[in-house]
Figure 1 (cartoon, rainbow, N blue to C red):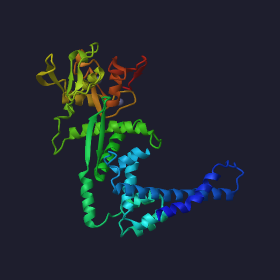
Figure 2 (figure 1 turned 30 degrees about the horizontal axis):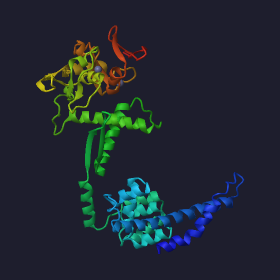
Figure 3 (figure 1 turned 180 degrees about the horizontal axis):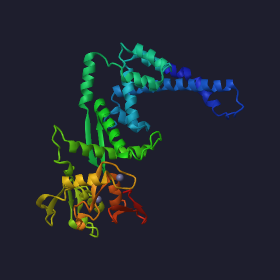
Figure 4 (figure 1 turned 90 degrees about the vertical axis):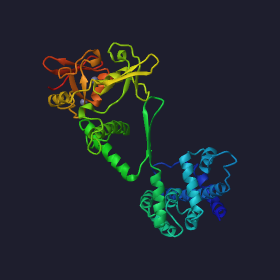
Length: 407
Ligand SMILES: [Zn+2]
Ligand SMILES: [Zn+2]
């Protein structure tokens, strides 16, 4: 039957191919010519659906015979991707739809006749059973592929027991991992339940708004790259706030002033402004730049770890250089947020104007508050900040330009 459907379409396919060589007639084209063109597009699309159906039937048969096995592939989708040059996700969808179609005679026949597209078949085969396919097919004919996708997402899957089993399997597949890449950055990958994902997205959005309320003008679309970078910063804020708030009422890392604790293994020479960069790495061995070490150690509970010449740990000292809670309160009441001109964000680090590694005091006169973004700017970004007369801060950019804060 499949072969018949394909053969029946052949003469028309030839017709379309011939006429495609004609040149487009330009603006003087008549309405009926447009209509004709539209018909031909629709007809060819139907042919493509029918031919795709034939392809799916062949794939289903190949899969049933485990034809991919002798070729050394782990499954049919991988073989299909390699053999036909499509990406493996597309191949998986084809194999899945092909298997499903063998148990759905009405859907299979409709696609063979070119009545429904592969996009619709793909959506429909996710939920259809022999009992429900008639209703779903009716629905598929009257909706767009996108509408059908939405309906299918909310469609009850099989019997109650099937549904529970399916839900159990989906739930068991939840996962989250964070791992370093070869560039010294970290990659997060995971699969979340819809409710956890929704909570995460709302939280990231809220944190992003809090971090960037000054910069982002509502109603003005921003690039996806900028939005993605904001989400990455927002995740950092979320983690920090969660640790500060703690769980079961107990903050994870002690007082607010203690912040979260990042263990940094760093040589004293690396931290000094003029020192040669030596060892500078996070607990898991990820190397960070000397200036990043200076920024992190600027306002973090830093644990002094003495190392022997062979790198072994000799002594773990007390936590040092923590901004005491009283000093942080004083800084917050004086600075009222980030001191960078025009910023004022409330989520801040305490920056040492003269770094403590260079002999600067952890005191009200040597510290000021900067948001994470501007703190990074004065360390890694090549800016500096100095005091100007009676307590005004002057920010000097990488080219020597001066910017005064408004106080
Ligand atoms: Zn700093
Ligand atoms: Zn700022």
